[in-house]
Amino acid sequence: MADKLAWRAERQNAADAQSGAGDTTRRGVIGSGIAIRDVVKAYGIFRAADEVSLDIEPGEFITLLGPSGSGKTTLLNLIAGFQRLDEGEILVDGKPVHDVPTHKRGFGMVFQSYALFPNMTVAQNVAFPLRMAGIDRATADRRVAETLEMMRLSEHAGKMPSQMSGGQQQRVAIARSIVLRPKVVLMDEPLSALDRRLRESIQIEIRQLHQTLGSTILFVTHDQGEALTMSDRIAVMDAGKIIQIGTPTEIYRHPKDRFVASFVGESNLIEAEVVQKRGNTMTLKNRAGYVFSAESRDAIDVGRATVLVRPERIAISATPVPNSIPATVTSALFLGEIVRIEAELEGGETLLIRCTDMAGRPLPAVGDSLHVSWNAEDCWVLS
Ligand code: ATP
Image 1 (spheres, rainbow, N blue to C red):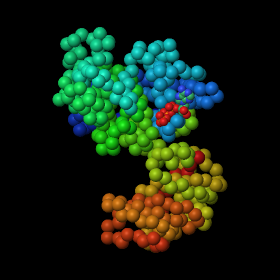
Image 2 (cartoon, rainbow, N blue to C red; image 1 turned 135 degrees about the vertical axis):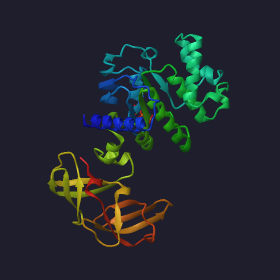
Image 3 (cartoon, protein in one colour; image 1 turned 60 degrees about the horizontal axis):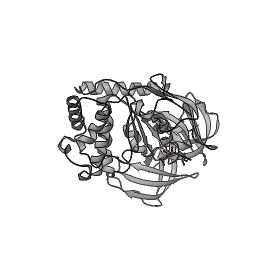
Image 4 (cartoon, protein in one colour; image 1 turned 60 degrees about the vertical axis):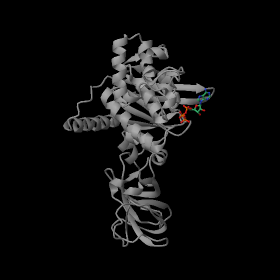
């Protein structure tokens, strides 16, 4: 519930910011709400989807993120109707869809392989769903032109797919998936065959498209950066289950457990002991007895705990500051805009540190002693 409220608040802020900027492109939400309840898909005794529940709001951009084999495609296929579920139910706008065949669900779909018709031009490929739906020629021509324009493909309308780059072909596949203005678009790793720069530019296009269309988008990726950039909310999956669902900031700052902390972003995990609790703020001691503060929203008991500190939230100083821990530099790399340091804490762990503010300071050398510290709100006690 808190996740959803946070998502709504973030979306409202984004919408306010947009309207302030005079953006009138968003046409309002046309997307469907999807309710996934206790869904199981089993192969023999193996459960590819294991009692998955997820409520997707109308018009939401939601990403299924997880390692290979975690069940993302299985869940997408169950929603699409490519596979039948064994238990549970899937409701679209409140109605069960189990007996509705894929082509009648009216979803747009994009896959990793572009699957364009090689013997049709770009415009004909995009027009295909309109032809199948029996839309009259004039309306179809108008809709194709509008959709090509949206995907910045107008100048390529007459080309064959073989005359287009991979990125352009994937934009055609996306155009084809939205030409009927579907209430739901399912995207399974659509960018994973593209190089990084192209991926980043199409990520922005898909985001803008989502704003313009207002469709519900369910996006599958194993790329955490992609998930953080694009989504209203992220559902992190492992072994057929949703481990955590939340906004990108929640997932990154307040991961539920070690798995989410390690899978999303770079993480430093420190073993420590909670010695005092005051509301959400804890006082902890690391193995060498150094005291520091951290936060948690869950009911954490006094005793052993693992805390997360992101590399960019660690401050370093030559002399001790309150709540700092001594450390010894084991590696230091100048990467231009940032300096990447590894330092072994007194008491055990090696921390990764990313600093931007090194101007005027010499680069630390291997063997140097320094002191690391962080604010309580940048240190998260895992449950
Ligand atoms: P990837 O990122 O590699 O595509 P994924 O998270 O999408 O992975 P799924 O394709 O959903 O994972 O597969 C989840 C698990 O279900 C995997 O262990 C896979 O081997 C298994 N699985 C999928 N389809 C079948 C099948 N037809 N028969 C048996 N096992 C299957």
